[in-house]
Image (cartoon, rainbow, N blue to C red; front, side, top):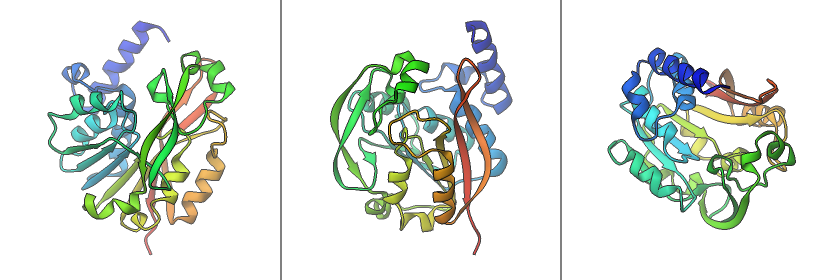
Length: 246
């Protein structure tokens, strides 16, 4: 994609979302997060709480504060070198609280692979396929990070309904959900990234994740984001689910 096309696309997304061109210059501004949340708002008019697992530099949280100004946002980012950037990008927004840890299915420490391209950092190894498609993800090193189950934190976070759990944890989504079984009773919507091809070693692909989430009591609403290769191969998609009414 040429730089001119990228700029034109960014301008189109921000104008269509109502954020305005000035927002493009804000710390943590993101075209992808703006597009995803613009699509989400079509299905979710209001939110009281957003759990932002895999916050990175705050791209999703900053955009969410625009689309859902009444929501309290809890952003989790485990990478020690990225967390200070998350804090700087969100410190002006009182609705966002930040936590230097990962969410998962255990409490303690977690072996983690910090990638030179921070978006690709994960508890799982980057696959050979992803390295081939995205060469910037080749380099990573192993570290240990703090991890907690969402179920162990939910009383501290005080969920205000409606609640959205957003997962962008690079193939670790199922483990986060396993550690949130009790919390899911208070969660109204799930938004997570899933892969159609093996981007991380051992990650569950779309079909497995879709059936797993259905068993947890959620039903599919719509795709709200998409990642394709330069050859237009479908790699990943951001999917929105809602809790079934009993």
